[in-house]
Length: 505
Image (cartoon, rainbow, N blue to C red; front, side):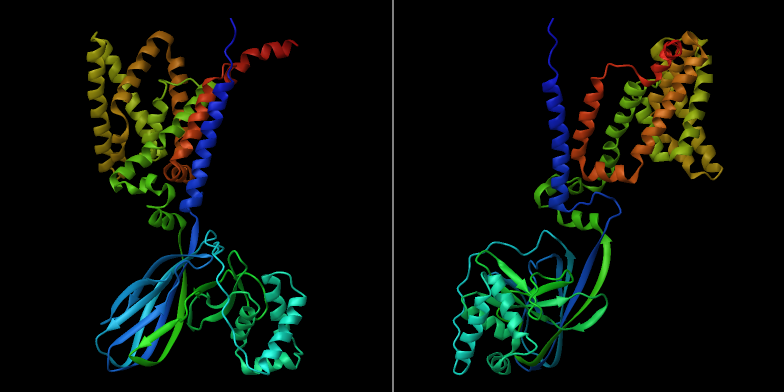
C-alpha cells in the first residue's frame, strides 16, 4: 500500500504558523501594541499660552494647532478658557482652535493643551500634488542681486534639495559678497530663503517648530524651511541646511498662513511650556486602537468581566502545549490526559506553594475516604457522586481552617475543579488496587511535575501579555501541537531501555 504523502500536512502547518506570526506583526505595527509587557513610551504635554489685551468688544481668537505633525501622534487636545466658547475647526485642511466671547476687556489669557507621543509611522513624507511656486517681485538693485545669487547656486545643484542646500551655504557664508549682503540687509533671513526658492521655481514655505525639552516654560517657536520636490514636502534647517527634522522638534504650524489671529484684541503674544511623562505603551495602544486596522478584533473591546475570563482561557493552549510535549516527546506519565492543565489553572489562581499544599491535602484525605467507600461495594456512579461531595467538604474545611489561621490563600482552594479531583482520586484508587502504589506515585508526581511546568509558563508575565494581546499567536501553538501529534519515535524516557545495547557494543 502506497504511503500517503505528508507534504500537504506540513504545508498546512507552515501556513498556520506563518498566518499567526503575520497577524501578530500586523497588530503590532497597526495598533502599536508592544511585544513586551512593561514597555514604556514618552508622552509630551505641551501647553500654548495666549496673552492679549481685549478692547471691550467681541473677541475671536484663532490658533493653528498640530494635526498630523511628522514624527509624532496627537493623543488629545483640549482648551482651558473660562468664559469663552471653544471649538476645533478644519479649514482647507488646516486645523485651528477657536475661542469666542461676546465682550471682553483688559488682559486676557487663553490656554491650549495637546498630548503628543513619538511615532515613526507619521514621518510626514506623504505624496502630494506639487503646488505652484509663489510669484515674487523684486525691485532694483535687489532684482539683479537675486538673479546672480540664484545663478551661482543653480550652477552647483541638480535637484530642488541640492539647490536649497547650496542657497543656504551662500547666504550663511562667513564672507558674503555684495549681492548677498544687500539681500540680507533688506530682508528677514528665513523669509529671504523662501522667496528666493519660489523665485527659482521651487515651492517653498516657512513652518514653525517647537523644540521639546522637559520642564521648560515660555518657549518660542523656531522657523524651519520646507520645499516641495515634486512628490512631497521636505524640511530643512534654515541655518545649517540639514535635511530632515530633529527627533526633539514637533512642527506646530506647516501649511497655515498665520499662526495666531486675534480679532477684538491687541498686543497678542504666544508662548509654550512642556512636560515629559512616561506611560505604558500598551495603555496608549488600547486607548487608540478601537477603530484602527485590527482594533475591532481586540479583546479590549469586550466588557471588563469578559476580559478577565478570556485572560484565563487564553492561557489554556500553553498548558496544552506543555502537556503534549511532556507526554509525547518526553514520555512523562500523568493521571488523566489534561488534568495537569486544570491543576495549573488552579495554581495560577492560588499561587504555586499554597496550591500544591491544598492539592496534596485534598487528594491524600480523599484517598483515605475512598478506601472506606470501596468497602461499601457501591456502584461506580454512586461512588463518584459521593467522592464529589467529600471533595467539596474537604476543600470547605481547608478554606475555613486556613481563614481561621490567618492564611488568605486558604479561600482560593475552591478554584480546583471538584469533579476532576474526585475522578482523579477514583482513578488513583483503582490504579493502587490494580498496579500497586508505585504506579500511583509515578503518575501522581508526573501529573504534579507537568502541572508545575505548565503553571510556570502560563504565569509568566510575557506569556500573559502575548496570549491576550496577540491571540492569533495561538495558531502557532496549534501548529506545534499538530506537529507533535505526528511524532511516532521513541520518547526520551524510553531511551534508558536501550542502555544495555550501548554497553554491550
